[in-house]
Length: 300
Image (cartoon, rainbow, N blue to C red; front, side):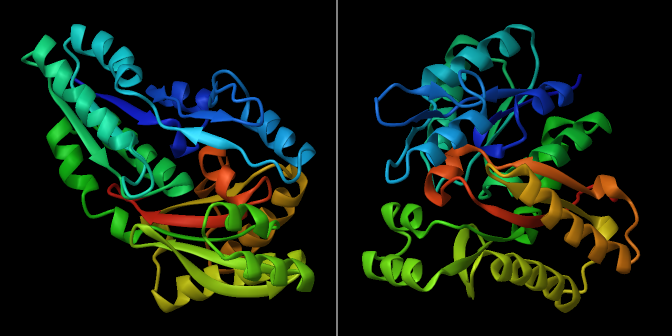
């Protein structure tokens, strides 16, 4: 019997793609100004919320994690069908979503003592979590059992890496990622941060002068990493991610793909676009853009 996959909306696959893959989504909540909370990807499209952010500079959105009951609402019907459940959550260092899912799993076992349910802290975020969830779906579709899939997924998070930048330092300041003085100085000098994700956390990859140079630098860092780590591209899932500006992303993504072509990677499907969800966007503003990769459990 195939198991069923559940993930919180921070995986940034989007509602339609998750439905296509046969994955259930548990939404984060997001709000702006009026304290009305929307369920991410259900009550409001990601693009529309980013546009609200762009139209209200200086107003910082808030997020709230899914509740135990939110998870139970998804788990119960699956358990009633006798389906094993794999739930994959945002890095537990960033949010309590994983703990909500674990608490829900404990309650579920009281109602359905024979249920098979595993809750994984992905230790990942945004596109890396999404690529990780996609790999879980590939393992499921290849006929792996729940336990075999959990075992196969275990070494993958350590291989995840993201390179990205954002245009507005105030969101990073508001979220405590940089200080007020650094944000003010950076804004004055038009400096853009280069940010990475590795080993379950954010790191600084330096700065660049202006948006165009920061995007070029992200590309440079990515390809330098591929060379330094001797990355065998067919063994990895890759994705680009963006916030509001699809045209800017299309141009950036083309530069990444052209570089991959030079390396002999001629399959456009290896580089799928992700619209970075507002769970992460509240910390980066509406202008994040970057590229990420994670190793496959099943070779491409």
